[in-house]
Length: 362
Image 1 (cartoon, rainbow, N blue to C red):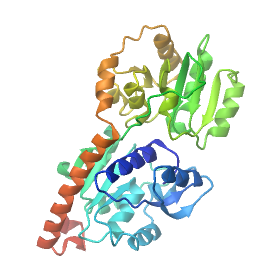
Image 2 (image 1 turned 180 degrees about the vertical axis):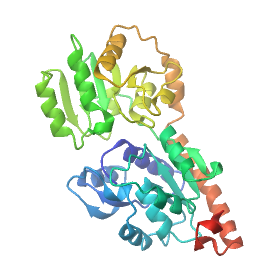
Image 3 (image 1 turned 180 degrees about the horizontal axis):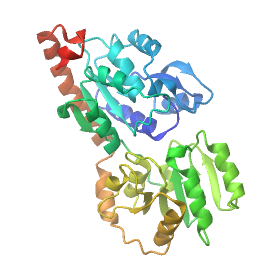
């Protein structure tokens, strides 16, 4: 799914950084929005899209096995040296459309909630053909292990963060920031209820777009926050809102690894986040302040930072964030790609029946 979102931004940053390492990327998407296509163009890529939508609340091809998508991919992968597929629907289709001597890499970015039906059996059948899984967060890691994938094929996924460190002109200070999709799992409504619970909430910038944008706008009005909350819309440089903020809030109900939280750490901005999924790992060692995922707790955490009582380790946060710069991530992924290219060629030469089914892949 190609739309404005954190996973897409990270993928595009990775691909752009790899250009300098000699990697040529062709971007293929089962579903896309015009805004997603425009985002790819901003990074220098002209995507091939199976179906363009004005808006997608839930990409069917992202979550389900689609033979039509697999067939469409199959006609476009003949010249590829390696295929890196993001999310279950993509890697399932890639395993059916990729030539046998071409490695397939898969990334899972979040918890699999199967909004359109549980397809674990199909995932298990396809997983044997994936040469390497990159998993973001503990839930995604557990999902891949439960498919029976060998531990040697599983690596922690790493997202590239923004390098922009100069704030946009005209921003209010003090201020809070939220950057991400306006979607239930990201919890923008949770943040608004927390702001309403504060005695004197600072001006808060909600940077992003998504299927909840109308609902969020109505909630801002209903909670009496119109003078306190600014809905900026999508930005491909969200760090320019975060730089210099008083605090950055990650109110997610689900979050494998928060790109926005780590961007804030890189900028030295205190982070308040819900203690869900992978966020306790991301913000360990006092890198950020973790709270239960409810409005009262989130409000209390925000107030703790506003009052200067959070006692976070800014230096540790900056050290952690430094390992997620685009060029470092690009070099790490390229090293894995190169290992797979050598290993896959040798394996196919030794086992010409590799593509006949899961049994021969063991």
